[in-house]
Image (cartoon, rainbow, N blue to C red):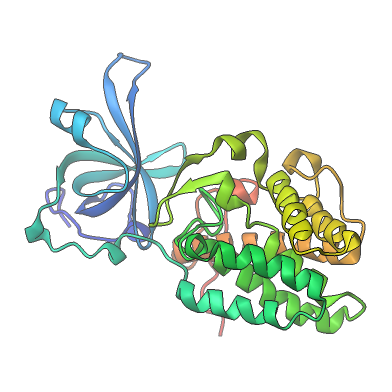
Length: 324
């Protein structure tokens, strides 16, 4: 391809030095000022269904500055460059879409591989099968009350399961893993493990402000000051009292939530003191890391290393390809 040719490719196919053109969703945009020369520029995160990437527009017109916003689709032309070993897009031109562009929003929003309605129903089966009625009543009340938001909420602003329906997908894959591990570690209470898996991150719906595209614009005031762990513990107590649950069951569920991050610096003031909580922690870590590793493998050619990823302690992941 010559320097003047422009490729129409998905974000996960971007290569350094390549000129690209296409439609992308603006996940975030901020007007900033360069330290070197004091010039204004726009700092973007743009996305399609394959991923997202940082992008910068250095020549900012008054129209673009006043009109560009989050969560809209625009057409972009630019060049893929590398900055501190990470790919980003240097934007040359950006324009708003028109009706003639015939945009399909599903092409620009990353979603869970299983439809949210199906994930909700699959998780509901685990709740309906619980034998402990107090646990079942608490989990069911919280789960059903938040059905509408659960259908689109991500599990994070960035990194693992930061996609539409990501919170439900994260919970479901953990439940499947838990069900299989409980066949090996059969001395634990299944209901307590399943309840902890379902409840452990549900208060992220209060911690983060997400739109129906599954894109988080910011953390809420309560989320920033309290975090989803504290909010989750409080919610279990309130709902537990509403359904007249046994105090010991409420306390055990609170401990599951309170300890699942394991370390104080990550938000857990206590470490797991029951085996079910220990299992929950490692299920959570495993699912988050496997999600990010699979994402990096999908974005990396066989025989090559990925970019460094913060959520994996700045490790690079090697795609060894098909070994059969």
